Length: 79
Image 1: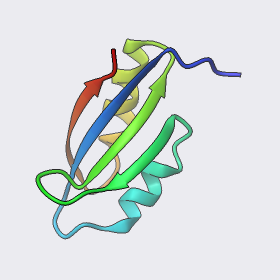
Image 2 (image 1 turned 90 degrees about the horizontal axis):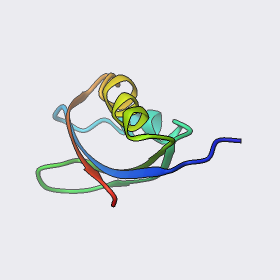
Image 3 (image 1 turned 180 degrees about the vertical axis):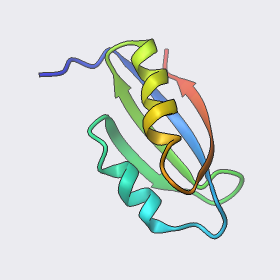
Image 4 (image 1 turned 45 degrees about the horizontal axis):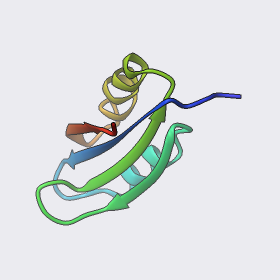
């Protein structure tokens, strides 16, 4: 059982035009607790949970950012 200690909202900018495959792929990741499609500068807002802040950064940089079609992210750690 994983005990999550750190959470963050991640704003995701995707390649134009938006592909729903990106949302589907990210939503299937076990550390994603919610995901919403947005309009404006960012295409998605995701809430993720991790064990540590280092783990949080790794999940964003290695998992979310590596999804084909993700152009950039902005992380907001919840304190």
